Amino acid sequence: MYFPLLYPDELLYSGIARCKAHLGISNHKTLLHMLFGDSKVAAITDLPTHLVALANNTGLDMANVIMRHTLFPLYAPFIPQKRRTELFQAMLATDRPTIGLAGASTALVKWPEWLRYCPACFDDMAARFGEPYWRRSWQIQGIDACPEHGYQLLDSPIPFRRAQRHEFHPASPLFLPRNLHTSPASEEAASLAKGATQLLELEEAQSPGYGRWTNLYRHLATECGARRGRQVRAEVIWEKILACHRRDWLNVSGLLTSRDPPPWLLAMFRKHRKGFSALQHLVVWTSLRPGQHLGELIDEAMARQVDVSTSQPRQQLPAEAGQKQRHRVLWLQALDDHGGAKAARQKGGEACYAWLYRHDRHWLMAANHARQHRQGNNSHVDWRARDRKLVRLLIRIGRDSEKDLSLPRRSRNWFLQQLPHRASIERHLDQMPLCRTFLNRYAESVDEYQIRRLTAAMLEDVRAGIPSKRWKLEKRCGLEKSRQAPLTTVFIRLIGRWIE
Image (cartoon, rainbow, N blue to C red; front, side):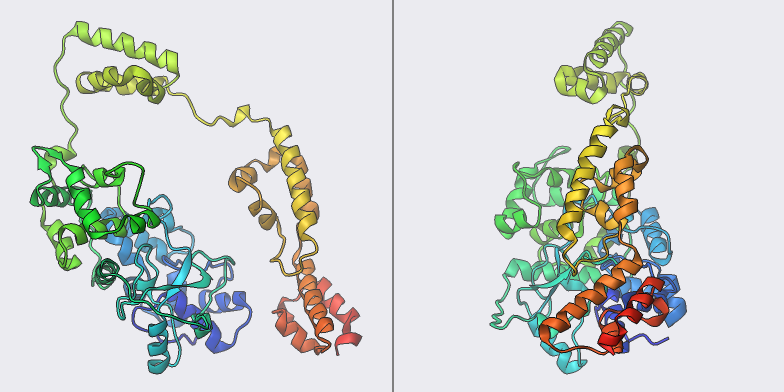
C-alpha cells in the first residue's frame, strides 16, 4: 500500500502521521489496520514496534528505518550487546515492549514532555519538500538547539508520550506562534546538539559493553588528572563539567542533585554496572574531550580490552576461625534485631557486613537469603476499606465527567487511569467487588461512546445554527458504516428526520 518517502532524519512516527494526512484518513484505527494489520498498535515516538508487519505492508527496509528513523542509535551503544540485539528484535516483533530493554523507563534522564521543532527548519522543509516533519534530533531530552540552524527549539502542543494511545499527529506550521521570535542557542547547547546528531548518524550503533566503557572512563579520568591511584577524584571532573555547562541547565535536565559531585557521575567513573543515558555521556565527553567526533570515542571504547580482574569476583581474604565466628554471631543478631540485611547495614552493621563480605562472603550471602523478609506483603492490606474508598472516588469521577461530552471513551481502562496506583488496583479487582461492580455497570460501551460523539456534534450545530447532513455528521465523528455499533445505527435512524 501507499507510504510516503521518509525524509532525512525523520521519525517513523512522523512518516506514519504524514501518511494519514496524505490519504485523508480521519479514523486512526483504520490507518493502523491498513499499515500494520492491527488496530491496537501504539503510537510510540522513539522506539516503535510491529515493524515487520509494517514492512510486509509497505515494503520498507526495517533495518534502515530503525537506524535512520528511530531513536534506537541513542540507546544502542550504551547497553550490553545482548540487550541491544533483544531491543532490535523487540522493535520488529508485535508482542514485546521496548522501553524497558532500552532502560528509558528507569533512567535518570527522562524523555521530553512535548515534541519539539525548529521554526527555521519548518520554513526550509516547506520550501524543499512542501511540508514539515518531525526530526529525530529535535526529540532528545537536554538537546535544546537545532543542529542545522543553531536556534532554540520550541515546544509543540503534541505530547512526546501520546495522550491518545493510537493517535499519530503530523508536524504543522500552525504550531508557530503569531509573534514568533527565534533566539540563537548557547554554544554549549549547539555543542551538545552536534554530538547528538553524530550519535544518530552512526552507520552501525555498536555496543562496547560495560567492561570497555569502564576502562574508557578510567582512562578519561587519568587523562584529566582526576586519578589518585585506583581512586577517581570525581570533584575534579565535576568542576570541568560546571565550567562547560550551566547549573540551571543541568538541573532542568535532571543531572543536578543536592550533592556535589552527583552520584551518577561517581557511578560513571567507577565500574559500570548499568547503562547511562546518551545525555550523561555527552555531558562528560563535551567537557573532557571537546570537539572530538563521537564515533571516534565509541571506536576507542571498542578497542579497549575488558579488564578480566575487575570482571571476576575478588578472592576472600584469610581470617581466623574465632574472628569469623564472632562476626557471624554479631551479624545474625543484627538480622534478628532489624528484620533484614539492608536495615541491619543502615543501623550500625556496616563494619560487620564489610568484614564478612571480605572474609566470609559465601556464608554472608546464604545467611542474608535465609533471613530475607518479603517487602510489600499485600496480605496486610485491608482490601474492604480500600474498596470502599476507591469506589467513592470512582463515583465522584463518574459524576464530575458525565456532562463533558468531549472526553475520550469512559471505558473501564479510562476510569482505572484516573485512580492512584492503577496497576495495583487492576491486579486486585477480584478483592474489590464494589469497584468491579461500578466498572461493569458504568464503563461506557462503544455504542454509548459513538452516540455521545454524535450528540456533541449535533449540539455544536444547534449553537452555530447550521445543521449538518447525516454523512457530514458521521464523518465529523469518525463513524464509518462498517464500524457503527448496532445501537448507534438505531440512534441515527431515530434522529434522521432532523439531520437529513
